[in-house]
Image 1 (cartoon, rainbow, N blue to C red):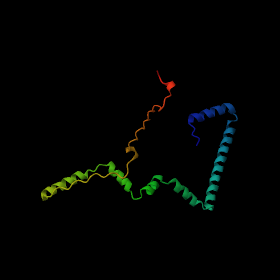
Image 2 (image 1 turned 180 degrees about the horizontal axis):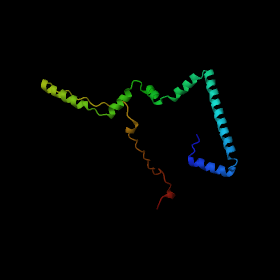
Image 3 (image 1 turned 60 degrees about the vertical axis):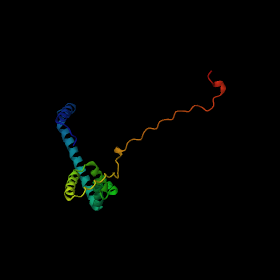
Image 4 (image 1 turned 90 degrees about the vertical axis):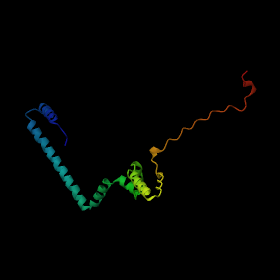
Length: 161
């Protein structure tokens, strides 16, 4: 409970033995142990009363609501709100993984086309993604400050000679 090591307990006992004295030490130990027992009894009684109040007030629903809030999955709820049918996630996973089945399918189509004497079908052009992640967008070019233009009129007394 208090996370004392044996060396710390021994140090406390040695200081208590010196401060209290060997004659009054048993009385002091009984007093401290009685206080610890009384504190434990009070804590158990308090817990019992709180549990009884919860049962009487039907706060089980509130407890269930707290547990529901504690177990709330924010990521899942946001995903349901933004992408309920998972099309966005599927598009992004298609972009991340290169298709390995496409070359094999084209090879069989070309072989079948050569055997039948018809020209092979043209490959489909790559589709542009519907969503570009912010990391792939290049940063804007910095705007260069315009050089100041010379004044349109310079008075004659300020001209260089």
